[in-house]
Length: 248
Ligand SMILES: [Fe+2]
Image 1 (cartoon, helix red, strand yellow):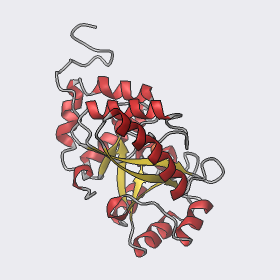
Image 2 (tube, helix red, strand yellow):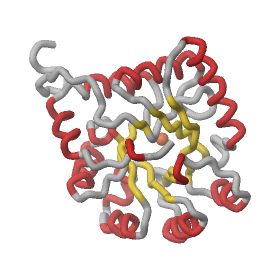
Image 3 (spheres, helix red, strand yellow):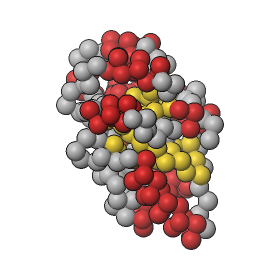
Image 4 (cartoon, helix red, strand yellow):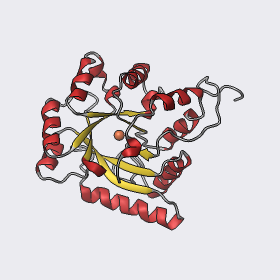
């Protein structure tokens, strides 16, 4: 490929990520649309390790009808992965958690107190990609009242919010933290999503960055991106994110 890689950006030598704690990924085997089996999960962990990741919070989908996971199904998948990592002598600190779609199923899990939050009681929540949850502010309020700190997953990817960008400041001021996808910043999805994610960074509205990695293809894109000059710029701009400060 020579001097310029496929993104048309000059190559640099660094291959480490600027954070060592991953907060959004679908690497547990067989319980959502991420890794289908233990072998793939181990491969994804190895990829993350090569980027300097030392701690991973796994965030399997919990969504009504499609992935009705519970703390039990998530823990069981985690045990399978951990056993495989132990067998291969791979050291990685992993905390299993979830990415909760805001829906009726989630409301029931809150009511029944059967959530599996991050360490420090952060809870990763997401909207549907078609429409926002109708009572998102009430839900944020309720979660905070119960001692959780909600983190909205990839706010930049909800296209319906692009038309009313003031919603971002409202939700953030309301006490909802934001986790932006590394893949968004890289331009993996749409140019508008990329542009918004960089603007949010400039506006101090990015609390966490996560890969949202589902499969090997995502990992390959990230591996290439962290060789680029643009990646260096990102690392500088994102130095205040909270990923590494989470107490395990
Ligand atoms: Fe996700």
